[in-house]
Image (cartoon, rainbow, N blue to C red; front, side, top):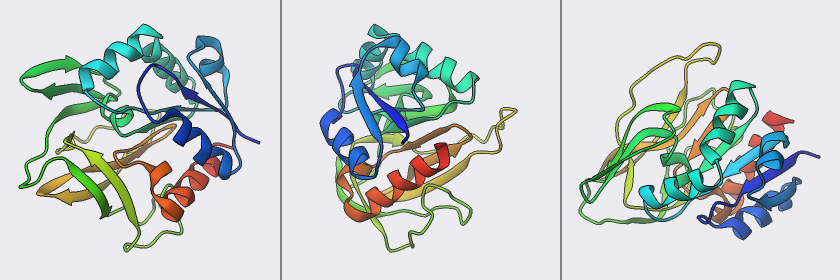
Length: 210
């Protein structure tokens, strides 16, 4: 059984993520403990709210160090919603620029759409070779709640990891809906709120790290 830590840094749907992961067979602990988060088989970094607040919370538990050290050792990390956004270099909200974890290049900024936030179900366009979306077809729908996203992808290959696989969605314009990059993966949507499709994605992720 895969030992998963859901990182508790004061932001995110912790219990929803815990329940969803338990349902697909993970041994889950919700904690802010540095050593537990570093040594587990797989780490989930959730997040809701503002980019700056999430980064402040993450730093308060040395979360950016945990993520960096895990990835340096090839140990799996999954970011969800703002937990995905903070993996980019920076976020800009209400004119405030905040440094992120810089695991990926690029900026998270406001969606350009007639209706913001983007709230509800949407389809995504995943690469054919995607592991996360294996067994899911193009009609599968996932649950989004966000006003900000990475709307461009600056391709960069960081050895020894392969070229990132980027999944896109559209709300007004295109934005990054998920990324798979060696041991680092993330989704802008909430798999724990996305019914059977979300459960399948979490199961795929667990199989990829076991």
